[in-house]
Amino acid sequence: GNSVTQMEGPVTLSEEAFLTINCTYTATGYPSLFWYVQYPGEGLQLLLKATKADDKGSNKGFEATYRKETTSFHLEKGSVQVSDSAVYFCALSGNDYKLSFGAGTTVTVRA
Amino acid sequence: DTAVSQTPKYLVTQMGNDKSIKCEQNLGHDTMYWYKQDSKKFLKIMFSYNNKELIINETVPNRFSPKSPDKAHLNLHINSLELGDSAVYFCASSRGRGGPVLETQYFGPGTRLLVL
Image (cartoon, rainbow over all chains, first blue to last red; front, side, top):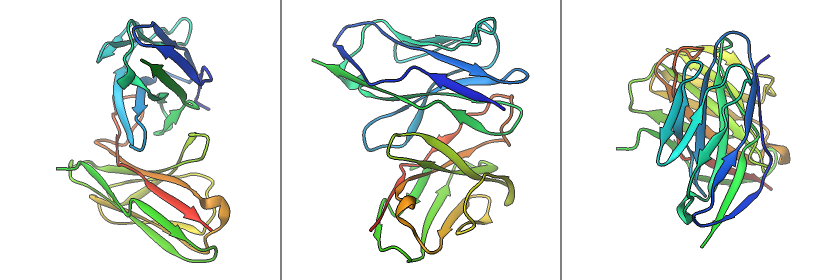
C-alpha cells in the first residue's frame, strides 16, 4: 500500500536558520504530494502541494519538489522564524482514495 | 466563516459512556473524513463519506459509528468509551473522492477527547 516516511523530530533551530525535513514515499501510480502544517492547538492546514514529477510547491517561504526518481518530497525553508514552530506532516493522495500521512516532525524555532 | 467546524472542542467523559462529535462543512464539498490523532501526533484515517455514502472504513472498532445526514455533515458516535479512545479527532472535507487527482483536504480544529 501507499506509505510516507518522514524524518523524525523533534527539530530545534535558531531563527534565520535553514530548515530541511526529509520525506520519502511508496506508492503505486502517480500520487499527489502534500505538506500540511499543524500549529499548536489547531487543526492541519495545507502548506503546499505538487501533483506531478518535477513540480515545485511553494508557500510562505517553504518549498518542496516532487522527485519521482528518488520518491522524495523534502520540505525546505531558507530562513525560519519563531512563528514557523509547528508540526509538519508529509502526505500523499493516491489510488486508494486516502490521504496517507507521515508521522509528523515537530519543529521548534528559538529566538 | 469557518470552513470546517467541529463540536465540541473539548470532551471529557467517563469510561463506558456514549458520546458524539459533530462536524459541518460549508465549502460545498462532496467528501468528508474522520481522522484520529494519537498522543504522538500520528494521524490515521478512520472513515470517509462521499455524498452520504461510506467509501473508506478502516479497521476501527465497531463502537465507532459515523453518520452523514447530508453531504455537509458527518458525525461520529462512540459507544462504550475506553481509555484508549483518548485522542484528538479531526474532521476534514475535500471536493472530490480523493485519488491521484489533486485533492486538498480542509481540516476542522479538532475535538480533544479525554476518557477517564
